[in-house]
Image (cartoon, rainbow, N blue to C red):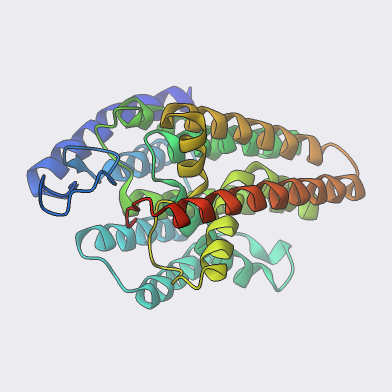
Length: 332
């Protein structure tokens, strides 16, 4: 039932967020025809960027109807979303974003029972929030991609938590809210997550990963890492290729994994479906890793790392070819 409540709320609240975005001008605008228009934007009309507010409101609202979350966790998610919303209104500098998200991570961690873990748990949660907020933001460059991948990851995390006797409600609720959001975000998207939604989603995924770790220790952490494997791959791929290309880490481009897959597959819908499939395989591997010995789970993670490295190398060569061909890029 919580899944369907969150889904219904997200359908309505995402619509409301879309209307607010249109009314306030908080939209992603493609360049006007003849004024720097170069075919780089994947949409041709202004799209509101407040869809993530609908996801956050539906998720937190549904959870608060039940047992709810600890106030500090809610505060951390709200603060993270507000930082992203401020970035949507007026782009923040990279240093300001990282500092603000670090503070939000500390607030979030204050609401988790980290005393059950090692002393490294507190900085670990802060680091996890920084990584996931940026990973979601990086992969949110194509209609339906980030929301679909996050919903799939939530399914895997819910299965891991439930298998260890924990309460999977938070993961189930977030999955429902994301499915409701996807009704508005699938191609052609009528609303985007925006930075507010991307950062807030990163915070909620951090909470779920922490819950998995609390339920099953290192086993749970490895399982969460595999469930979130596609996000981890995109973040790593983007950082490494930008470093190798002597490109600023905060400088946008259109050589992300999904962009390169779209060029290879012929369209973006196929690229999204391919990555959704990979996300499902990764989430399944995460659940499977939780059911075997810790040594076997480590082996599974190592195999995933090798496969990811090989795939990243192939995509890097494709990205290099794109750059050498002089194909246009979008700053995102």
